[in-house]
Image (cartoon, rainbow, N blue to C red):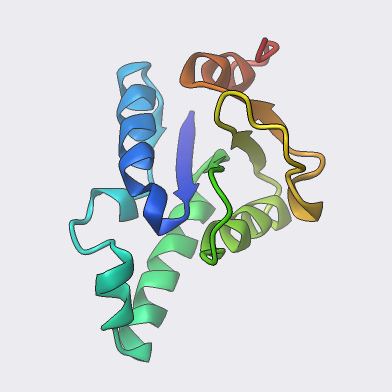
Length: 134
């Protein structure tokens, strides 16, 4: 099983933790953005259009490799690249699983309305393996 972990840049630390836990559970994680020290909002502001295009193509390539995309949801943000990644994954026929924080009750938005859902990594692993998130 191969997973791509998507999240807004401000949630990079959580993406790193989720990716590590998935790897510990035997899931191959193909997303690389969260391992890069330059993956910050501040660093992204300094990128040229050509550099942004290169990063986008790398992400698209990794999404094409995955079986499923895990999108980490968090507080409202102006960062929305992960939603584009989730929609690309759906277009390619991949599973999309929304990982929401405990206690989150706000709507997930139109594009994630029918996505599978989990509230923690244990629930995520259950969903990935075909069981209920609980």
